[in-house]
Length: 301
Image 1 (tube, helix red, strand yellow):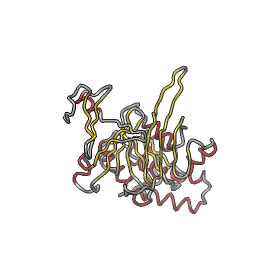
Image 2: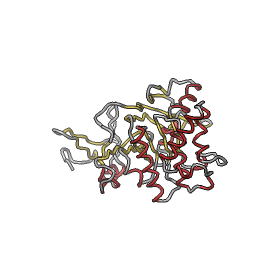
Image 3: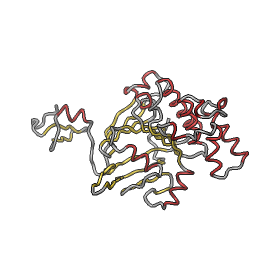
Image 4: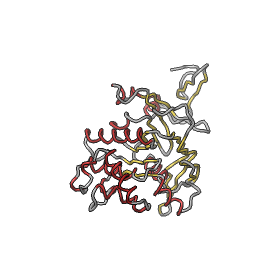
């Protein structure tokens, strides 16, 4: 598991904004988001539709450019890169796996040819291409199916080929957008096992955007985005092979405090206590107490 006391961050986003202009309207997708991801981490980003998680993934992948703030991946500053640099970044530093299987693979090419294709575009020698292609297909458990086209493979097999394609050029970062969204439970678990195996074998940093509870509670860390900001974080406190590893009890949960002191309390807490507008905050010896404005002075309930 990743050492969460370490400051060896590969991704650093601070006060990140993304504003889209649609006709005369401005839509704010990210509102001062903060996120740090450690080198070699396997983590998931979750949030309601429209929360900004896919926008964040597109920014980290160099497919979109932030409007303001800070976004560092490795040694690259994504806000200051030219279009040419972004193309180089997408080709060399990041791999993508999309929910729609058809978006990942060329349908008339075999699994072997799909994995080999990005290596051809990067100018790898034939010998290196063959070695790497066979290595990656074996790594995802499809060495025996390498000469089959996508229409001869199951949905899970196609997604495993897509993962092999994404990692063929050995990028330090893998981004996956709902990779199990179109798969059944057993196949989704297989895909997660592939991610974890590749994470451990190659040390690749993996960021997964998902709603799938089967994946969420098997990754090392879960970050929840709400209204364009990170609001909650859960860190695994048990190993994946332990019984409680696939439940919320297998994680320690935290609310995120940003650099200017803002907290996003869980919505269920806000609703339960009917918090809105002004709230009372009391500093005790080692904790804070929060209650509605109309609550009794000094009441800790």
